[in-house]
Length: 166
Image (cartoon, rainbow, N blue to C red; front, top):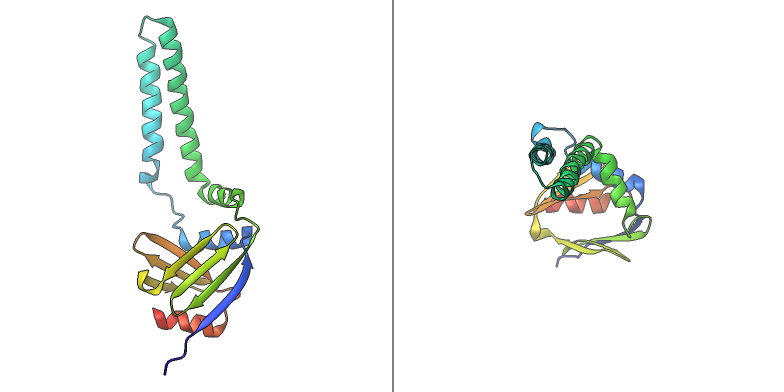
């Protein structure tokens, strides 16, 4: 006879939680390929600006001129979002409806379920590709992405149960 395991914990989706999640699950190193989109926007903007300066129709040139500067501005915003990736991500999370609201995590034989007023998400054990334990939590690799589970608030029995499922 096997006994079923269930663990529930309520926590707040605050800035500290989001920061821990980001730090544990995102590769924050900047690679040259990260700037490809910014470079393409800049090239498109400069090309539009150069091509409109040789045209004849003043109104069409004026509108295209603005479009060129729009693409250059877009390139600057994209480059800044790479430079300040963590801050940008944290800001977006804190602007979401779920921010600063309580959430309940339930770990049982089916998987890991997260429920709040705005989030109702379940990850089944069979959908988990890999579970990597770190000092602060568990990084769960799925077929289409990653999820992070903080150890804060987890009992030792819950952590052992997750380790066994790996």
